[in-house]
Every structure is written in structure tokens, then in C-alpha cells.
Image (tube, rainbow, N blue to C red):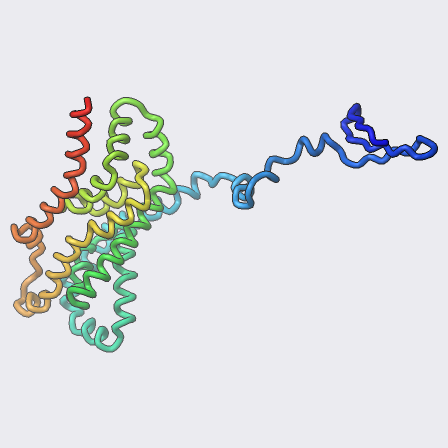
Length: 288
């Protein structure tokens, strides 16, 4: 005969033997009712539960290092990364390229990445150098690759530290800040494209500001890669003809970017980028 007894928090199976005095406890109900909550979580979530939040110092360290390097580089590298340095080392670079193309290409991408990642002076010089050393197709490819990777590094460093706190504050804000945040969310891709295409927006600002307002990383990635291609083409194109400029004893003219035949197509791309914002705004007013 089986009976259930819960007076002491146990499920008991009383097996009545011939002398009616044998009781066998099979399971304890209380511990089962109070199982640790982690046992119901997937393995990855259990690790997140046990993981302690990172210290503010650790979270802010990457971005602080970038800012410090940018300040030091501003005062120390201005005369080193220049067209004069490129002109003085022209023959040595060309000879090394001819004998060690892959090594020079890898070194160029790494150096350009560091320039962008730490916001060091010389990004324009590096872009022109890409065309000077590798030609238009490969030079543009290397320029876009290095600049994009550097931009991603700045974004992640800022997002990991200051950006996370600021984005959370914007999400909790009211009034004007909330409207700005919502407007950015509604037109995120278009705004990111505009920041890349408009020459007046500093490259460092276009790298940093999106991280501080909490844009989606995926949107940031592909708008960065596509958005910097027009400018990279122009600077690389200037670099392709840099040898002739040096032969004439002149310096490259970066004002070419503002020539009508160059700035015109870029402005046309800006119009295409802003068009979705105009359409959405017009539709919203019409619905009202």
C-alpha cells in the first residue's frame, strides 16, 4: 500500500511490510521546489549570471588610450607623416614595393589603420600614398579597408565605455534629446551615409558620434564601408598622379576635392542619402 505524506516536506512511499513498520523516503519535495534558478538557464546565460560587471576603469580604458594617443600624435607626428616625407623617401618606397609588394601592402594597411584608429594626423597623406604606391584599384581597396577597420575600432572602443552610458541616458531622456534620439533611430542609415559623404564632417567625428548615440553596429559597418568609397577614390586618384607632381617640384593639390566635377557627384549621393528622410517626414506630416 502506498501513501503520500507531506507533513515534513517529504514525499514518502510507505511500504507496508508484514510488521507495518518500514518507511522508505524516496525524494525530498522542498529542495526540488527550491532548485537554483540557474539550472533552468542555457549554458551561455549561466555564464552571464556569474559574470561580474566590468569596472568603469576597464570599460573606459580603450577609448582613453585612443584619446591620449590622438593628443600625443597631434603634437609629435605632424611633420613626420607628410608629403615631404613621402617625396624624400619616394625612390626607396618604390624599390621596396617592387621587391616586397605583399609586405609593403600589409604594412601600409596596418599603418593607415593605426592612423585612423588613434586619430593621428596624416589620414589624407595616407590615402594619397595608397594611390601613389599601388595604383587606383588596389590603392582604393587598401584605403577603404584600413580606414573602415580603424573606424570600427574607434566605434567599439567608444561604445564599450562612454557610449554605453550616454546611449542609456539618451534613451531615458525626455524633451528635445528624446526627439533627436528618435529621429536618429527613424533615419539612422540615411544620417550615417550623410556623415560619411559630406566632406565638411570630420572623419573622427563621423567615427565617434554614432557610437555615443547608440546606433546599430551593423548599420554603422556597411554605411562606413560604402560611404567612404567616393572620398577614397578621389584621394587615391590624386595619389596616382603624385609622381608627376613631385617631378615638377610641386605639392599635391588636395583642393581638387572641391572641383565641380568631383564634388558634384558626391553632393548627388548626399541628395540620394537625404531623400528617404524627406519622404518619411512628408508622409508623417500628411498622415497628421
